[in-house]
Amino acid sequence: MKHKATDTDPEISSALLAWYGRSRRDLPWRGTNDPYRVWVSEIILQQTRVVQGTAYYHRFLERFPTVEALAAASVDEVMKVWEGLGYYSRARNMHAAARTVVHDLGGHFPEDAAGLRRLKGIGPYTAAAIASIAYGEAVPVLDGNVFRVIARLFAIRLPRGSAGDREVTRLTRQLIPADAPGDFNQALMELGALVCTPGDPLCDDCPVRGYCLAYKEGWTRQLPIASAPPKVEKRYFHYLVVTCDKEILVTRRDRRDIWQLLWEFPALEMQKEISPEKVLRLFEKEIPGITGEEAPVISPVIRHQLTHRTILARFYHVHLREWPEALKKEWAKIPLDKMDGLAFSRLITAYMESHPQRFGS
Ligand code: SF4
Image (cartoon, rainbow, N blue to C red; front, side, top):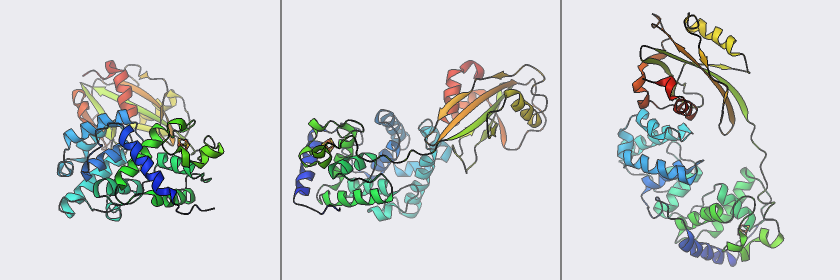
């Protein structure tokens, strides 16, 4: 049954806004309606915890205080500031969108959600957040927090997905007040983050408990209906870390895969677990003689979790007395003390940080 707009909708909105006024966290991006800052905070906070996101937000704005500064930077500079945050396509898309805003739109962001969605990397959620917070457009946001709150409030028995998202968006649109859409959207997200949490929500502290069907019916633990868990793929990476005369071999990742355009060591990817000896034989074909001098140091398997992938990686350290005459054209030799200037995946930076002696310059 569809929930029609009712007289209680404005009461729910007012109760939420009043609660938000007294209970919201004092976060650095709150209180700004500068579309650039709202955009930076929304992109950084997707899939990122607030504590980690706050540090990146400050760092990003310090380096790129305006959309013009971001557009003028190189993609490598942007990736370097983003390093460790994951989901690197977000950084590349921001850089591309900043260039569109500066070069094609005279430095002005589109002022509504439909226009914002035409920028690279801005989907329905981010467009709605920027349009409502920066420009006061009454357009509902939908993220995991909002879905949970609305699904419980109106006892929606649909999981996330097109039908569930449509219904939750329709109900949120009924609630959103024309005079404070930005605060209302943020209030819903904040309620989901602080009170209407997954598992056991803190209903005793909830400003809309009196209107909540899940609370009334005792369904708070059953709602929202869980979606089927995504399939997790396993990938087996073997990294060849070759050093010689204070230099190291690096290469840039392909555009069509995870960690696009980040740097890494020459790598082999296997379909399944295979023995390090076999991997070394394959590396030998790339650089003849690599196993002939000193025995390579081989790391244990390192497990690295991404959202839909488990990476199982090994590192093979080889030190050469001299570089072979010919190396593959996609490989580059760089001084060890220049590694800091390149952006690597979190897997590789974490490995380098935990084995500094193997990367001493
Ligand atoms: S009463 Fe409980 S379940 Fe309902 S919206 Fe509030 S916190 Fe969520």
